[in-house]
Structures are given as structure tokens and as C-alpha cells.
Image (cartoon, rainbow, N blue to C red):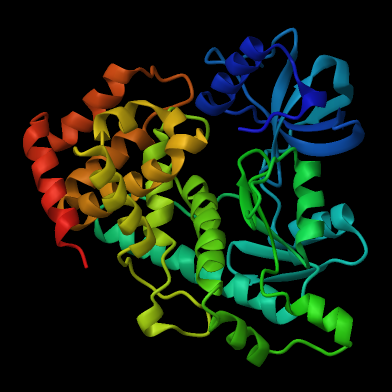
Length: 398
């Protein structure tokens, strides 16, 4: 969760505000707010949320605004410049309104593609690369909804237009991330920002760099050559992984800011990120879940080195295992293995578990005991048997 320094209010007050923002009914009035964000003046139309008694809920430190483009702002009182409201009901921007909004925001030098259902691609790279990614987003969204619907998981159409910002090179990408308040890893080529609700990435193919150097246009054949390169595999997994996060948090698979365990939404992203190299097509990714062999190899290595079953119960309880470099790699692999096992062997129970988490709100109680109880209510409390079944499944994967 990213919290821009310029907008910080008392954090306890902010948590209370966000609890109301995500759990209570929204006010009918459309708010017009002018405020400072990252030191710059910003105008937004949006909604401020109401308390359970119907009154507008605000703390002395400020309030939370959900804008019509899907971005969320915690606005400190000392950053508020002007505010008014009317009786027009809150509605997200339409596609045409969103396009106009984005053009005003990004300005000269950016292009736009909007023929991908709920997605808009804002890009400075070559059109073939941006088109490839737009098609990938659309197909991925369709596949996720179709796949989990068969398992009885209820998903919804995204309320907001979903934005992907595709930049021409790594330098521009890192500059954009810095403006977003995101600290990138050395090899990171994409991220999903929960506050802006956007994906940002850059053209890992390098095609735009070649175009600028040689003054020649990039075409679809150039994209196919890139996708056929061995090194493209990892990059495709990364950008797909971040797209799964965006789709998951906008279709109701996960609830923004609710106490959903990290292992689940990371495991689901890894579950869907895998290209199928046996049926490699012009997208570099095909429909359907496949064994994630890099994660499987890492999980088996972790298993061998620890001389015991990986600690699933600890992972369910401890989100920090995914944030510490010394433990993250092993637990991303374990999260994938657990999701893959549950989806392949116990899909009905997994759907029931997802439903429990989908019904949580920001102010739902969260503890180690609650997390284990939620899991056991769907998968049972015979952990010896569970570990045995899981271990046998993983050992049998090829």
C-alpha cells in the first residue's frame, strides 16, 4: 500500500476513514474537490463516504475521496483547497470521458488504445507493442472470469475503466514509478498500484528503442520475433502477473484493503501468469492454467533444503514472508504450489474459501487465529493429512 508523503494525515485517523470508505454506503452527492497531491494542485470529481447513520463521515485530519476514474486519495485537511457538492449521483467516467481525462493528464507525446473492453492502454512505445499488451489484457480478463465461474466463484464487471501505462523504455518507466511513489526492484519491468488502480510497465522488447535509433517503424513481425526469444518468457510472466492483480481487485476476486492474506492473491497471480510454450502464439501467452516450472523447481529446492514440508500454516498467517528478500522467493513458490494444488484437487473448497474472503471488509477482524480458522473451515483441520496430500501432488507434477 503506497501512501504519498505529501498527503499523510494521522495514520490511525486515516485507517478509520478508510474503514468507513470501504464498508459504508456512499453519499449521493457528487463532490468536486481541489487539493494538493504530491505538491501539485489537483481537481477531482468523486465521492466521500458516509457513516452507518447516514451522516458524512470525516475526521479532523481529513477524508478519503474515491475519484470517478477509480483512484483513491487520502486528503489531509491542510491540503484541501476547495470543495463543493451537488445532487448528481456518483458515476464512474464513461470510456469517452476517461479518454478525455487521460489526454488532459498525460499531455503531448502519449497515444491511446481503447478497443479492449474495460481496458485503456496509454502508451509512448510502438503501436504493435501496445496492441499486443491490450490484447493480452482483454484475453486474460476473459480467461480469469470464465475459469473461476466454472468453479462457482462470483466475479463482477469492473466498475471503472482500467488503465495500463506502457512506456517506451526503462528510464521513462523508472521516472514514472518515482512519481508514483514506487520503489522498484533492479529487474522489475511492471507494477500494479493499488491507489491509482493502474498498471505501469515499459516495452521490454526494445522495439521502440530500435525504431528511434534506426528511424524505421516497428511492425507485427518484430513483435513475433521478440515473443520467440527465450528471454521474453520471464518478462511476459511479470506483466501478466501485475495484470492479474489489477483484474482481481476490480472484479471482486479480492477486496481492496480488506485483510486478505498475501499468499492467496500472489498465488493466484502466479497461477495465471504462465505462458504455455508448447502452444506459443502471437501473444506469448495462452488460455488455461499450466504448471509454473520455475516456481515448481524453486518449491522443490526449498523443500529439499528445509528437510521438511514447507510451513503452509505460517505462510497463511504471516504476510511479511513475502516482503523480506530472504524469505520471499521460497514463499512465492509455495503460494503458487498451494493455489495450484487447491484449484486442481479441491476447487469447490477453494471457491468457498474465496467467498469467505470476498465478504470481508476493511474493518473485519484479522488475526493468526482467524486466518487459520477461515482456512480450516473449508479445508479441514487434519494438517498431517493435508500436508501428505499436498506433498504427493507436488512430487507428481511434471
